[in-house]
Amino acid sequence: MLEGLFRVKPVEASPHVDAGEPVEGSLTGEADLKRVLTARHLLLLGVGAIIGAGIFVMTGQAAANHAGPAIMLSFVLAGVACAFAGLCYAEFAAMIPVSGSAYSYTYATLGEAVAWFVGWSLVLEYLFAASAVAVGWSAYTISLMEHIAHYMGSDWKFPALLASAPVTYANGNITATGALFNLPAVLIVSAVGVLCYIGIRQSATANAVIVTIKVGVILALIGFGSQYVNPDNWTPFIPPNEGGDRFGWPGVFRAASIVFFAYIGFDAVSTTAQEAKNPQRDMPIGILGSLAVCTVLYIIVAAVLTGMMPYNLLGTAKPVATALENYPALAWLKLAVEIGAVAGLTSVILVMLMGQPRVFFAMARDGLMPKFFGAAHPKYHTPHKATVVVAIVAAMLAAFFPLGILGDLVSMGTLLAFATVCTGVLILRRTRPDLPRPFRVPFAPVTCVLGTLSCLALVGFMGWYNWALLGAWTFVGFLIYFGYGYRHSKLRQAP
Image 1 (cartoon, rainbow, N blue to C red):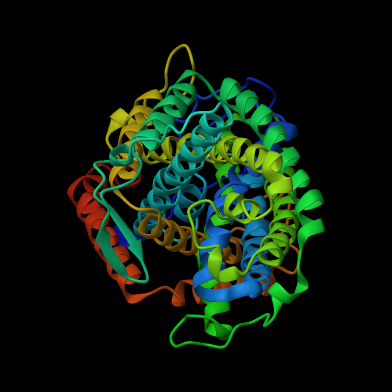
Image 2 (image 1 turned 180 degrees about the vertical axis):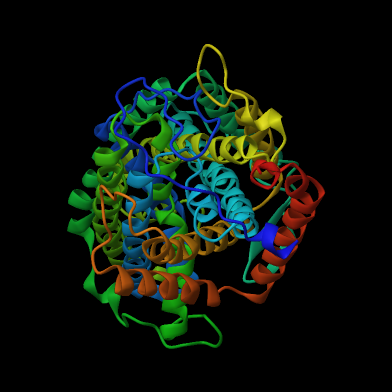
C-alpha cells in the first residue's frame, strides 16, 4: 500500500515539437490537445493572469489591515518567493511540456499520493482564484455601470440584493450582508467559460486584447497618479504593531502571504505547455518574462496608491477607484481605471478557467479522476467537459462566498504547490541527472531550497482558520483519492 502511494511515474524529456504536432512525452494518453501557442501568447497569458486582483483588489486590503505603506515590501517578499518558484517551473515546463503543471511534475518526482495532494491544491489555486477574482470584477463592474449612469444624468444604482455574497468576511469574522447572491460574478464566469470551451487560440487572442487595455490603463495610473502622491502618507512606513498581524513586521509578512495571491498567474502558463508550439524555448520566456514585468508594475502601483491616500482608507473591494475619488481632476482616470480593472480581472478569470480544466485533464488521463474530465472536444481540441464543470462550480463559489475567504485559500494552495515544485527540481536532478534540460535553474541547490523555505514561511503566516479550512479541504481530497483515484490509477495497474 505505502509503496503504491509513493510510486513515481516514469519520465522522459519530451522531444522538440512543431506547431500542431501532439506529443505524449512521458505521460501517456495526452495527445488530443493542439500546439498553437507562441512565446508572445504565453507571455501575454502570464501577464493576463498576474495583473489583476493584486493591483485592483488585494493591494488596498492588505495595506489597510496589515502592512500600511510597507505593502511595497510585501510585494518584494512575495515576488522573491515567486522568482525562486518561477525558475523551477521553467525547468520543468521546458523539460516536460504537458498540461498538468505542478501535478505532473510532482508525479514524476515525489510519487502519486503527493501528486494528488498538489493536484487537489491546484484546485484551490485555479478554481478558487477564478471565483475570488470574479467577486472583485463584480465590484468594479457595478462601480463602472453606476459611474456611466451618473455621467448620463441618472441616479441608477445596481440592486444591492444581487451585488454581493450573502455574507462578508473580515478580520476572522463572518457577518451577513442582506444580499441574495453576486449576479455579475456569475455572469462573467459563465461568459468566460464559454470562451474557454470554444478554443485555446480564441482565448489567447481575447487575452492579448485585454492585456493591452489594462497595461495601458496601469501605465496611465502610474503617470498621472504619481503627480498627486503625498510623501507624508508613507510615514510611518511600517506602522506600529497593534497586536497579532496588524502592522509591524508581522503585518508586512502577513500582507506578503495575502498579495502572493496576485502572483499566481505565471504558473498557469505551465498548464498550456501541451499547447505551445516550441515549449522548450517558449515556456521559460512566458513564465519568467511575465513574472518580471508584473513584479515591477506591482511595486510601483503600490507606492502610488499608498502615496495618494492614507493606507487605512484603502480597504475596499476597489481600492484604486477609491483612491482616485479623492481627486476630481482625475475623474476621467477613475473611469479609465474601472474599465481597465474590468478588463484586467476578466483576463485573470480567463487564464484561471483555462488552467484548472487542464489539470483535471491530466489527472483523468492518469486515472486519478473520472474519464469524464479527460475528454477533449473533437472540433475545438479543448477539455470541454472539465471546462463546463469548473465554470459551474466557480460561478457558484463567486455567487455565495466573500473575497476574503477565497483569497486566503487560493494563496495557501498556491504556496504549497510552489514549495513542492521547488523540491521536485532538486529530487529529479539527483534521480535523473541524464534528462536533457533545455532550461536549467541557476545555482539549483540554493535556489530550490530558498524557494521551498520562502513559500512555506509565507504559509506559516496564515491564520488558524485558514489552516482549518485547508485541513478540511485536504481531508475531502484524500477521501476522493482513496475512493476513486487509488483504485483506478493507470500507474498502479501497469505491470
